[in-house]
Length: 488
Image 1 (tube, rainbow, N blue to C red):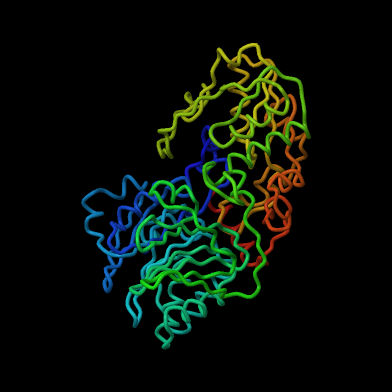
Image 2: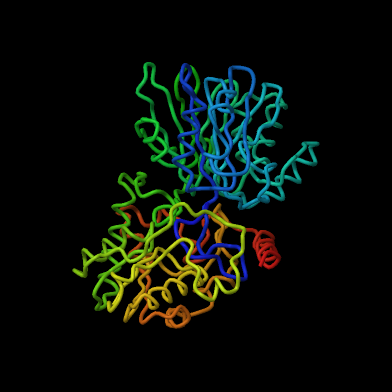
């Protein structure tokens, strides 16, 4: 996705200085409704989860209709091409690439042909055994057209169907071959599936349309239900497969080794603040992060500001707990996406600010506490701090509403390799000196997890600890390092 905030990518890399989410997925079974248009709006609400490509596949009972292209949802679809997507059910996808390059051939949904008809699959997450899975399928004479792990899952299902299994049997057999993180929406001529891996690393929810009979919707986040007027029913559970057909919705626990490990970064940063996780809007959780941060790391200042947009709830919480007034100190240009036009050296030297601009009237002469959700490489933080000082701030204290990111993610979040993560090689004091703040503090891991009001063992926090709930093969770790060095 295009990050919620940042100035520019580091001048030596086109990569933004934030972790980036992998994808958003959507699925719907609603005969009699305009499923293509409902899917379009669902993806529109999930745009923050991936802005490289978008796609929708619909089924009219027999035939699959597919449209996918590079670009934003609003750029890829229009009334004309949506009108050429008839059907009773659909799946949709919005992508940020973590496995497979950023090309239209890797856009989703992935469509494969089987003896029972076409299958269309949309995937959020990342497999850690893609190489082995592809090699196994190639040895069985399966064919691939892309480089994604998502296609490997779809091809595995198709292979099992062609061996004589029905959709459910084939899907369950294929999932048993997959290791890693995967939340899936899968459309077939017979119905729509929603699936999560046994750890439930990436989210997937079920909603219902207020129709008679009830129609079901699947989405990465509840904000995609809200936009189409669907009601939130429940989460798809880790290791669960829901099968939605004309007979209604059936549930199957395809894995008996469920061990819930939702990515805690979904709650801190990735998911929209109006989405519901763990029974409440994430805005409320992020407020609590800020309040805890104020208690753990207080300091004297005149105002508290947040980095738009995801740092703002924690900044408000920090203000509430500390009694220091909250103010808007940075204005975000919400119409700026990724640009491949490089600024001139003179523009860089003058402090180009394409996405965020400080408010001098608010900042001048003030001691400022600035709240952000994370620091990855420190390049963005350094530029923000300099901009605040240039606008007249007399002191800048930075507080981060998560612990230091010290390890890369292999489950569907695009993070730097470990040697590029500033907290993996520097102490908090050294980071503070590098980014130019008067003081720096991170929220403790205990505070981050306690604020969820849930079992603290039910979250994946591997990017803060290196304790990966799903084993990462050494080959995958080395491949990430090689790829990182090749692209920086």
